[in-house]
Length: 174
Image (cartoon, rainbow, N blue to C red):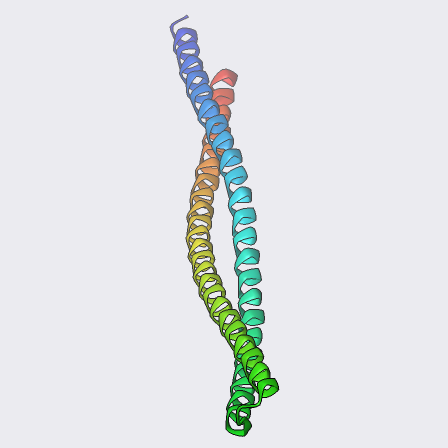
């Protein structure tokens, strides 16, 4: 009777231990699932930020090409204007052409200034996206490290539960 009581007490201890380990295992598996969801969202955010950065860089390159073209047009118009000024000798028609070219030159300069400002904005935006991508990459790496730790804990808990169950079964057989 004394031996039976000891075995029953031991079985209760093993069952309590197995229950506690089972609860911990469920908690760790829940946490792992949550971290997996966060990991998925971080990966998606990183991909979005990378695409936005790439788009901004592409727009920046397009604007740089337009800026180069505007600078060439500006230089050409300036040359034509100087040539017309030198050739004009009070001719009203020539004066109108010069005025028109000066207006075109002012318009091209305004376009050039606008393109430069837009290029600076896009460059700043691309840098911001780059920083965002770096931050998300860091968070992703941290999350993956935490997931690895949780998976290790999960594996240890599963082993403890199995060992506890075996000890309980062994105790019940005696």
